[in-house]
Image (cartoon, rainbow, N blue to C red; front, side, top):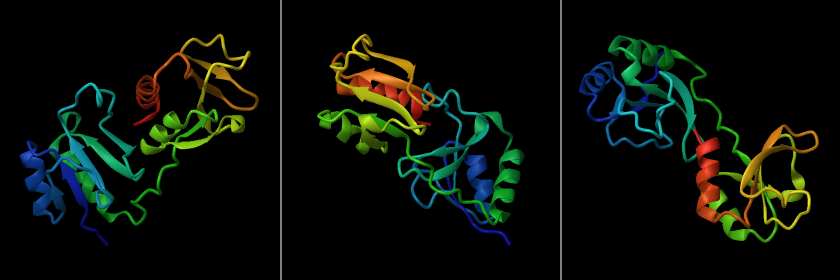
Length: 184
């Protein structure tokens, strides 16, 4: 059985829009991804999207996984064929992606609030575990005060963790660095 999907398509991709509407899919051209969007198709790949492969799952603001297609790397036929396969799949919707876990020192409430606002899972600094990808501290710890801005370090059983010194970086620099490294 086939489902009609809600597909967000860049508005200048008129051939794709027409083809997908002809086979019954709900196509929006507002260049937005919302909770109803199953597929996102774009072609104007700027520096934020330059590493986008032809087809990949991406997590957007609500952490819903959306099939994202780079039309500059695919033919119209490949796009339509992929959409048709996806619309027939019973398990198309991927569960919400796990939020990226960041450990933040107590007292860094502004940084914590901005991280939460940006969709990160924020936990106390003393809870560095194997799921933590970054930790932010204020620079008062002897073991970490040699870190001027940020570096990758290994802690206990955890893999390498981005370790950031908030006393030498402002909130915007911290968020920009984290978003660049961990947001898809």
